[in-house]
Length: 133
Image (cartoon, rainbow, N blue to C red; front, side, top):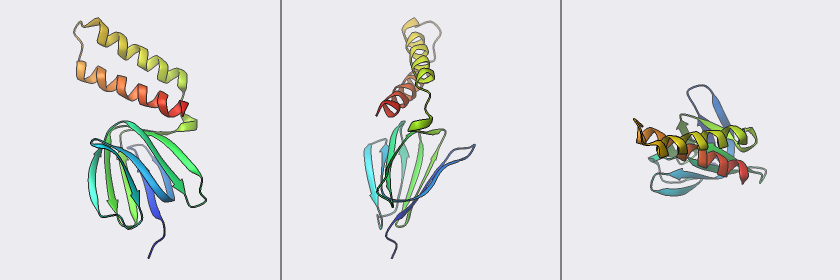
């Protein structure tokens, strides 16, 4: 019986994480959820937020993940997202600029795709939170 989970975080461009983990915490659309080895299988949607996991050496890792999906199996969790960044790779100035642009778009009210602007604001805020954690 496996003692650890295999964690894969994949975007359309690359595999961001491929590691063994003791526990994985992810931002589900119904709230944050945790996965340990031998978890009951399920498939769920993710919202932008922090994904954190503890590797087999007890080191904690933190990433920003955009919306996407997670497949949980007893010995692995596969996260498929549009984008993902490790905490140390997030450009805080770029994230702040994205937040400001999204806020201005929402405030202008002129010919704005509110759903898209709100999604951009949510992503920027979550990236800032992960970078500052």
